[in-house]
Image (cartoon, rainbow, N blue to C red; front, side, top):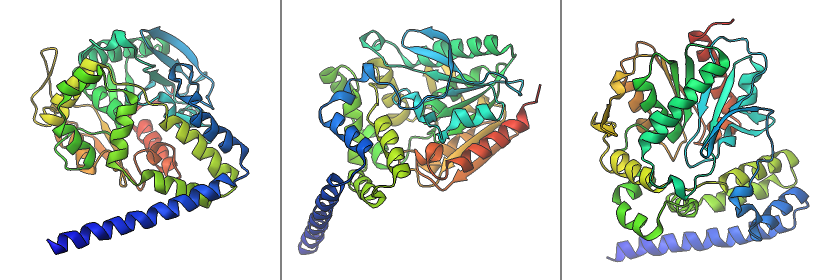
Length: 373
């Protein structure tokens, strides 16, 4: 018992020291002369940036909206594509799409478009109460399916390459397993397929009484999800502020911080029935990895996938563990299944300092399975 108390008190002392250092960093930051950051912090304190319906990203690569339905739309980025087959990018349902187009020098869609790839992106938009009754099958088969057809029609192509990020890739893989006549290759970026892990987020999801939670709250709100991420990474704010203080008045780094923090604060809710189904079938029962998943009575097997696939893994990812991501490669029957591993975190892999390693690898792989016009 005494040993346990020593461990506990040791941790408390450590937290106290961290708190004092955190306070020092806050004081140093308050003396910063970076006007843009001060404006950003001030707006958050007054709650202005929490009005999600009015949010607009700071930077946008020029695009054209080719189709809208319900809350979602399809954006087209490339005016003069060199490649015959387009690529359709599918972000997570709970994260805003513009992580793929965050800044002029950190935009994946701009990078691909400048390479001549015909880039399309599905923006899920902001769900409302009218989405609460929708099951996952609506997103997977109806809406992704419609997006694919609209892109193929707009690009005058017979099939496309599909890429998903995080949960966006997980649900896109379900669509691809049933529609390989329309999808000629699949890229999975930092996405889970096996939910048997013991990381903090997975353990929380497994132990959640999702029915009781939805009974109390009606949906999985953005604020509740942010709380879960904070519990899983309790020191994230401390290290974030430490990094910010070390930036000093470095405008480039502070500008990146501002754009990223704005995106992180711009999560949207996870509609009620889709969330219930996702937590129960994926996390708590792990049906996808067990080859037992059904959506609207449709049996879904990753082993039905025979098209080329690429899994892009972030070695420092604390949201999607490596084994959870690599389960896709283990399950599919594709003769071409490749892996790119980048020394980055879950977000850094798409917009951080190491992101261009992933971008170049994805583009090189895209070239292998597609042809120039």
